[in-house]
Image 1 (cartoon, rainbow, N blue to C red):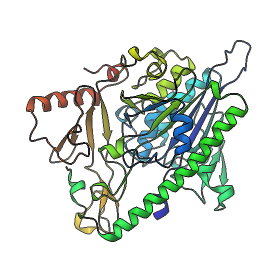
Image 2 (tube, rainbow, N blue to C red):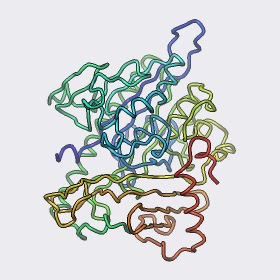
Image 3 (cartoon, rainbow, N blue to C red):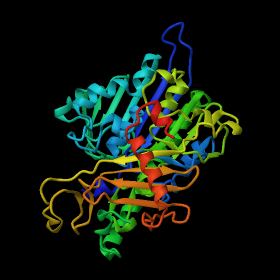
Image 4 (cartoon, rainbow, N blue to C red):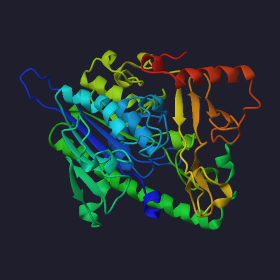
Length: 448
């Protein structure tokens, strides 16, 4: 259990190349999306990745305000694939019952994911690494299920593992052991949950988290090496100048903040901010952009690069390609004024034997009775950067708990100011939240 929870930067690589399958096909740019798992930004998650920062960030653009729309693996990855908020793709958490890689997802969402559009444009598509947490489940087609749109499919069965894992290799089971050279996968205010941990943390927890942090950095070094090898290969076959490379993560991660152990699922900056580096044709090197971008924008941006008519695509995100390649005076034209972050809490119907005092409805509990999730850890937030650096969050619990933070004066979100701000501002934020929670497609891009 320790290795699975401590070390979790398992990644997927989506390689999309346009080949001349017919005389009428115009050769377009190649596109590579590198997605790590659980990579934080707030705690210096990019610090050990000198090669990646140099080869992608310094050679292109760094987005300093990139966010996930939901801080958990399966719903976040579902948002990346579909370009939709969770309330539209309906993946709520990492369980089959939460629609993670379920038969419903396969029938209603996968046929409209971005690789399907690209495949129709005669792109050759490749997927390798972690897909969705419940992928490969016998209840949802097992390893034989290959999502539409992928020509080559090498997906991890289940959640992040580095040894003794199983892949679906184009629908056939492929088992791996524990030999490093052959098998190490990456080389192929608060709401009550935040009030429950002991503060300060006991020394045993501090030592555990220090070790976890070191091991997370170690896994990123392997990712760094992979990025270097990938770019060297593109250069050797003279395709680097015609290739867009995206580097990002599905969400952030916390390691001890607010005395929470190690996980994600919370509404705070350390869980919702993600790294985003992009290089490619027309992008000037060493460019830093402040405009907020979301993981639901990745699909639309990839389809924009491929030449898809975006007005025909039913997605909630928006392309940020113009921000990367347009003149500086045009880059703020598509900036969204605010956006939605939402999550549906997960809990067990029976109490955790290691934590009986808190009763049922909890999940992800550590032996010292610090729990990371619960049924009523269900929230929706409005995050705004343009006019004011604010976050407004409502919980779906019996307290109707609300958290509000001014991140200009309080960047670490230490003080919930809901009782101090102008009630008129609370009403405005509430109305924005209501609109965002029911938005779909164009209405998500044009909320006022």
